[in-house]
Length: 226
Image (cartoon, rainbow, N blue to C red; front, side, top):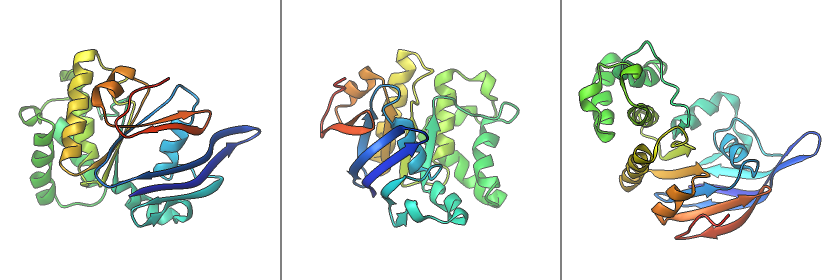
């Protein structure tokens, strides 16, 4: 599913964000990628989404060689990778239905398809009764659920969650993590990028630890070791 082969990323003049990363993530895995600030997590995310290219090495996602991907093919790749962030990035003047539908509208999907798919996706995150509300009328945890629903709209094979609980309290954090596990159990590969020790230790799933751009630990049923 995802392979990093000797991936190194340099930023001028002397910053080495990633240094010889070798990594294989199988379909349907749930993997936490952890490390302190400045360890290379953000760079790894940017390479996965083809926002950055490695200085050396190859990155394979499914049948795509991201290292050599053509600019016109990047949007197609990104539809296979749902991405959620710490910042929910919802459109404040659109309803929850409209926020989720927007991801289909920009791809030219007909309204008949949108009307069918959006309720199916929102049911996964448990907000069926709030489609007509606006983001300001939802709690932080509910807004993140909407962001997750939007990321699933193209039925991606991979869900990349970059610090998804960073703005949430402990109760909402637990609920979002449980939702990510549910999505994983439905067949989606989940990559959780975080520095939240409690979340990682609660999951008891595979943990990859980065330090100074290198993988220093890869545990099948791991804990946050730093």
